[in-house]
Amino acid sequence: MLTNFFGKSNPINYVLLSALLLFGFLIAIFKGILPFSSASEIFTALLLLLLLVFGILLLDFVIRKNYLTGKNTFGILIFTLFIVQLPVIYSHPEIIAATLFLMMATRRFLSLKSGKNIEKKILDASFYITIAGLFYPWCWLFFGVLYLGIIWHTTLQMRYLIIPIIGVFVIFILKTAYHFIVDTNFGWYYNTKINTSFDFSAYNATGLLITSSLLTTFIIWMGAVRFIRIAALPKKEKSSAWLILIALATTICVAIFGEVKTGAELLLPLFPLAIISANYIETNEGAGPVQPFDFWFKELLLWLLVVVSLFMLFI
Image (tube, rainbow, N blue to C red; front, side):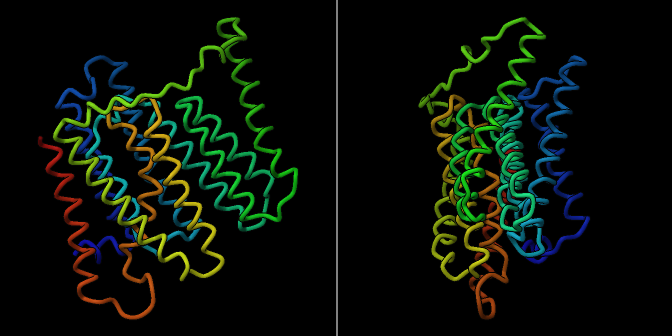
């Protein structure tokens, strides 16, 4: 039973998910999606694999550190299975990097509710979001989520609202200094464009159409259920639940309005979706005993995701 196996947090779970990610990586090489012939290509490919493994561990850390789910590995299971379905992400390292920095920003502003080191956490989150935007400019929309986190998790003070602006300015100065040293050019920002594309022709491919349809179904179903259940959550958990939902909506906007339309952009909403989906699947959510139909529905849902992921590896 998948719900029983991944309903626990055992070392074997992480080993299996890493092996699955490695298998998907090898399939991407075999299909020619990921170049792997020269030394530089091998180094780049292995670096991207390590970044995705780091992303899985980072997501698990964010979940545990902020008590976003129970003690299970449903979140990283769902995250990994969707990554396996999207080998095209290896062609867009900027999407991978931007996603990781947004995850790190999420870790910082969710922890604001502890009331400790507030200024440092806001500054760190602003650094991460700014850097994510340098890789993929539409990620700067995530500043809206940061400001909501400040409003909900702190006693609102003017200095807290100014700190993100300082964070942006610091990264701007550092990047300007880098360009001045490397290519004696102060005007790098003139070449920074926030491009938009609505060319979804890549989604006509069978594999991407299946994955995007499944992902959309998860977003609608899990998002709606989470939205309905927020009212029943303890007060101290509501703000974090709202922030994750808003982070999901924001990353969907980034994916829709961003320039990349190859399917790699679907990685962006995966981490908030994985958290919300884990909240739905974990059997201890809500009051009262688990109903048999509810248990088997969640079990079949996980098996569907596993089967589709394995199917996608070979088409």
